[in-house]
Length: 331
Image 1 (tube, rainbow, N blue to C red):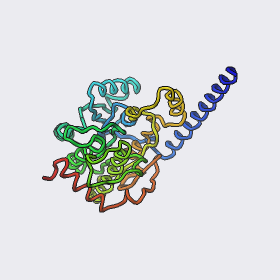
Image 2: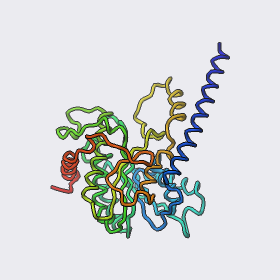
Image 3: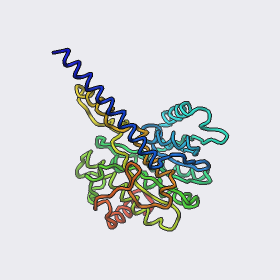
Image 4: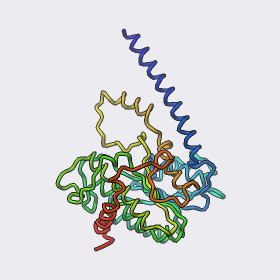
């Protein structure tokens, strides 16, 4: 009986390994066919990526550096960001930076603090003559109820409001650098969110899953309204979902100890790697295929349809107006 169990486990492992390899090959081919970074050059372009020290952001930073971009890593933990930058440089070798290459720059940015967002943008505006791409990537996922430095519910505050202020403060530089691009990382889970204007700060009730979905719906509505406002400026805005990716975003999700080995095996077999998950961000940041495309939603480097509530322009405008007041852009 024990031998049969071992054989079954080994057989299942081999099947999963084969599936993982075939899936990776198929995704790599699809990404190459879609032109996600294939042969593209970002030489002379400056890119800001929030949350670039791990997961999707780190993978995007490495690939855009490989494409010769000047990449500014906006990260909350400077020490972790510096370590990630050293690792990326080591992975890519000496040609990653220097003559003819790109550049990797670390800047402190805590999206849970409007003060930090303003300080980061002030430094960027002082030091950077241009900004070609802004990738709003950082996020927090299904955390217990917490508040930001400014008193906002953490998921809504970081995922939406922090990026809302960041983008607005950098809009002038993006316009002066046009054609330029804004890329907003959302999630398929937006479908389960609702914008409740009576309780945006979740002080009446809090459900960590619902609030994450709401923040991701807010990302899409923000991108849609911003695209409308930027028509004719040469600045494009698109949102995306990366799929289910194996990152540390789920650090607040509790998995029973006995279930962890099975979860780890399933995630290894079926979840995307960070590089696979970052392909759509890289595509929207660099591909000539989406030059001039704005106000759209993408997955796997292809445009996808949104559910009606994510295309509600009245809700998008109201959310914009309220967000302006919440972050202090309007009194």
